[in-house]
Length: 388
Image 1 (cartoon, rainbow, N blue to C red):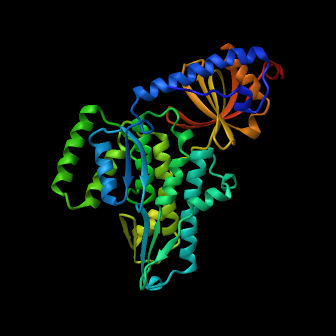
Image 2: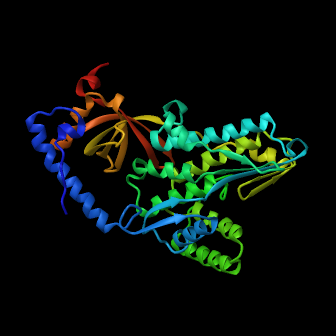
Image 3: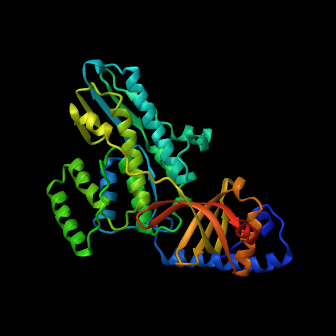
C-alpha cells in the first residue's frame, strides 16, 4: 500500500516551528495507519463490501430486513435511484384539483424543516443562514400535482444522496451498524414510510429483541405481498434497536415536524395521506399539534481533553478535533469552524504533538447520558482561568 503525505503546512495552510513538525508527523502517520488497520478490521459502510442501490420501496424493504432482522451492516454505500418520493394527498372541498395558498405554506414549511435537519446534522445548527445556496438547491424538492387530483409527489432520491455525500463528519465515531441505521432512518422518515408520533425510548434485552425479531419475521413472511405492512412492523424494530441513539431520534423528530407543518395548514381537510400514514378529521388536528421532544439546544461546557487528532474538512469550512476527555476517558469529536478556531489551532496541534492535555470550552447537545453534536468554542489558557 502506498501513502502520499502532504507537508503539515500544506495540509493546514499554516506555518509550524520545526520542533512541532517533528513531533506531529509521527502522530499523523500513526493515526493514518490505525485508520487503515481499522478499515480492514471493521467491515462498515465505507469499506470494500457491497454497494446497495435502492430503486423501489421493495428494495428498501429488503435492505431494512437484512439490517434489522439479520444484523447485516457490511455495506460500503447506499445510493438512491428513483426512490424514495415524498407523497402527500389532501382530500376535501377546497382541495378538489386545487391547492390553496395556505396549503402551499405547509409545503414550504416541510421543505424548511428538511433544511434544518441537514444544517443540524452537518453544521450542528438548525439556522437556515448557515446553509449555502448550492446546498439548498440540491436539497430542494419539486412537487408535481397529479392531473385531475390534489395528489402531490416529489422525487427525494437526489436530496437523500446529497445528505449521504455530506455525512462523513456525522458518522465519525459510529460503528457500522449505527451508520446504516442512520441511513435507513433518513430514507424511511423523510419518505413518510416511517412517521413516529413519539420515538420509542425503551430498550429491551437481547433475548426480548430476538423474540420480537422472530415474531416480526414470521409476520412478514405471512404477508409477502404487503410491503406496507412489513415496513410498518419494521418501524418498531428500528426505533427499539439497541444501536439507535440521539442522532437517529433527531432525524425522526425533524421529519415528523416536516409532516406536521403540512397538516397544520390544512385543518379543514377531510383526509390526508402522508407517505404511509393516513389522517382523518380530528386526527389531522391532533397530529399537527404534537410537539417535538424537549429542546436539545446545545449547552456550554468546559473540560480537560487530550487531543487525538485534527482533520480539516474537504470544503475547508471546519476542522474535526478528535479528543479524549480526561475525567472519564470518553472519546469526543467536536467540530471547529475555521472562522472560530483561529490561533487556537496552533495550541491544539502542539498539544497533539507533545501529548499534554488542554482545557476546552465547547457546546454540546445532551440526551439522557449521551453527549453529541459537540462544537468547539475556544481553548482556555491559564491566564483566562486566573481572571476573576
